[in-house]
Structures are given as structure tokens and as C-alpha cells.
Image (cartoon, rainbow, N blue to C red; front, top):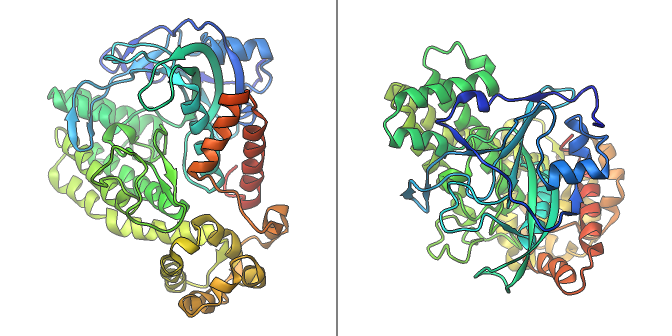
Length: 474
């Protein structure tokens, strides 16, 4: 097998035992045609030398990687869906495929699937993924990574040659299997499942596992549950702040769609904001706006409270309550950092940065539908160094209006952070890369109608150029 000496497989989740997952088999697909392969991520996992046949075997047919898990595991979990508890969840169309150490950092990576066939938790589903759904997830992860959000990475997308019937897509529609990389497959719902069954021993075992594997600095904490809760609160605050700065609406912020590493994953009916609108929803079925853009911090906090309720089986309430009380301040601080990063500036002090961030949100609100979310950050990236570019660009007249005076005045006090980034050709363009609904539909139409993948590939190339220009991710 063509693997590098840096390839380091692990079987840590498997060591938890049978109460946490079920061994399953991948579906047998009529075909496996590579539509997307993330060679950059594969390289970081010691798999950069895989040839085409090996890619088809391991990422298409999902044959075990050498030394990794001998059999896929469908992870067990419960969850609140739109705040209604559902004990009938679990990996229903995916599984944990392998665990590998990342080159250089040694950080654990999980390779998991979507669309890999039925499991004990499929209920009435077919365990499959539509090709359109796979394309949408590849785009979401590429865009979020470019914007500096802690996201899963799409590793591969294979078309699998089946005709699927769906209520939300013209059917029959094409099928696919996706492999994604996260830094942990343990969801809030994993704790919920064991708490539901009043298994304090399993909640404790899972807590000890999470601390030992993901948070080794906390293994000697006197109250492991409270220590874990504090770390998850911190990371979740950073995650939702990243979504808000990116203008991203997850769409389905159920407890089973949040993991203990503060990592965004599992992209269904997501949207990116066309313009500032706190009431904007991503899912057509979210008729009450529970997961609207402006309510995402509240939704994440509600989910954290459910996790704390599970940890009550092993921890004192005072420690868990204290962890939860930190969320508002942590979120505000994380949002300040995320917005300053998005503006590409370096501030003199925290109060000045906070004033700039507040002014930026007021400017976005004042712009309304005339000011798209992503172009605002593109125009002003670099602060004072980009003022002429912003004021002479296609939105210059808008920025010169009185409603933008506060922001214009404050931003001139900020120098660019890593100014060499402004030399990128990305900032010579008048328009940034966005990922709005109509463009996604257009990219899919080229595939569905003409089997033309060139627009999608060109879009992914531009998103990669954006990632490099911003320089926010390795």
C-alpha cells in the first residue's frame, strides 16, 4: 500500500466497547466514480500517496485502511430535534470508518461517512446520500474553512450509481457516498443516550475517554464532568462566534449535530446570508425560526444546558452551572476575535476592537439588502490599507453615506494584520467568493442537466484561492 511513514492509525473509539457503537458493513454500490478528492487533507493523514485504485477501494468501497478499525462502527446517540427528545437516533446513514493521527501535530482525526448504507439506526431510511447533498457539503466545508470556521473537511465524494427517491429533490436523483474528516465523532447526543438510560457509569466512561483522548490537560481535574463542561462551553462559544462572523446559518442545530470539540459538521439545509438578517432561516421546515441566524447563540447555549444535564449524573451541579454561566462572556469575546480576524486588522486594544466590531454590525444593518454580507468583509479587509479600495469600489457610494460614518472613522485607526495578504490577486477583484443559494443551484444544474463538473471544480479552485489569501487555516 502506498502510504507515508507518517501514517499513524488508531482504534481509540473502538476501545470504548459495545455500549457506544455497533459494527456494521458498508453498502455495496453499483459503481464508485470519484467526483471530489481532497488530496491536501489526505496528505496530512499520511495518505498522500494513495493511487487511484486505492482511493476507490478505501474511500469508495470503504475497505478498511491497514492497521485502522477492522470494521466500521455506527455510533450510538440520542438527541433533541427542534427541542423534542428523540431516543431513536444514531448513525443511520454513516459510520466511523477510521481514526488517524495528523502529520506534524499528532492530533487525532476521525474519518466518517455519509451515505454508506443502512445501519441499526436507519429507521425507515435507505442509508443513502444524494449526490446533490454531497456536493452541497463539499461546498459548505470549503467555504467555511476559507473563512476560518472550525469545520469538518470533505475528504472525498464518490458517485455510487443508484437512483434515489426523495421528497425534497426531483426524483429519481443520483446517489453518492461522502467521507469527511473531523477531529472527533462524539456528539452531545452520545452523553444523552447514556443519561437517558440512567447509566452514570457509561457517562463517566465517555467523559474519561474524551478527556484522555482530546483534552489530556484535564485528566487530573478533581471534577472531570465540570472540567469537560468548561472546555466544551469554551469551544462551542468559539464555534458559534465563527458562524456569526461568517454569516453562516447551520439550519439544524439539534443536540445530535454538535460535538464535544466545538467543530461544525453535518451540513444539510445550511445557508450563507445574502445580507444582514437576524431572522434568516436555512431550513424550510424551521417555520418558527428556532434556528434563525440571530438565534444561533441561544440555540447553542440551550444545547449546552442539555449536555450539562447529562453530566449531572457524575458531577456536582455547582460546577456545571458555573461553566454554563461563562458562555455569554466567552461568546462575546469570541465574536470580537472572529470579527477582527474577518476584517483582517490588528487593533491597539480590546476596547478599540470591540468598538469597531459593534460599528461593523451597525453598518451591516444600515446597509440592509443593498449590502451583501461577504462583500463588506472583502472590501474592508485590511482596515485603513483598504479604505481607498472600498470607497472607490462598487459599493463606494454606499460606504460614503452618513450611516457608515462611524465605521469609516473607526476602521481608519486599524492597520492590516499580516499586510502581505493584501497582495493576493483575490483582493484585486471587485467581488469576493460567496456561496449563496442561487449559485449552489446553478452549480448543481450543470451537473444534473449536462454532467458538467467544470463549474463546480472552478468554484472549489476559487474557494481554495480565498483560503490561501485569508491565510486563516493551515
